[in-house]
Image (cartoon, rainbow, N blue to C red; front, top):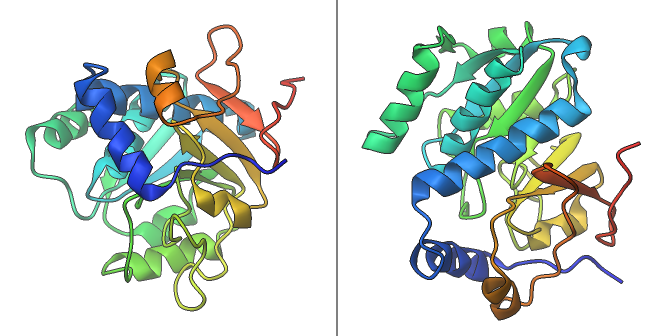
Length: 239
């Protein structure tokens, strides 16, 4: 049985329902998403494997998830660095960036130099709403992720991938397969083309919304915010 997925259209509709029917704020959803990502990173790359984490953030909500994840990773004992070339100007993004600066987490402009000095990368550039061409300055960044010698964890989608049809046929991202993918709320159709370690995160969907969107979500264990699954959606043991 194939893993049940959530289309881009339904993912957008579910987000709206979470904020209307579910009464969540965007701040809450971003906080829970970023927390999920940070737990997945801790699971696959514990601090003993290297504390330097480079977080590449895009200008939208996916980038905001990355900023939240970076804050949690700092509190876990990691040393995050932020690449955020197109910083969001609204109040939410500015507050998330300020929270990191208050922890003296560095923001850098040279992604490629930082890539040579890190132990793990969080790809929080583009999420489920991405479509079309990758625009500057991100083509070279995604090419860098393709060729990275350290593990990469992607948030909701490997950046440059189409949510419905997977990796691009050519250009930046055509050969990009991160070691880890964290699907937020529910897996998207692109997981059909994904071959690495796959986590589902976002422990906030109520039973009524789960039924409305016919979601087949795994059971979370204990206080975990993520669940690792195989290609059929079966939960993998933490042991």
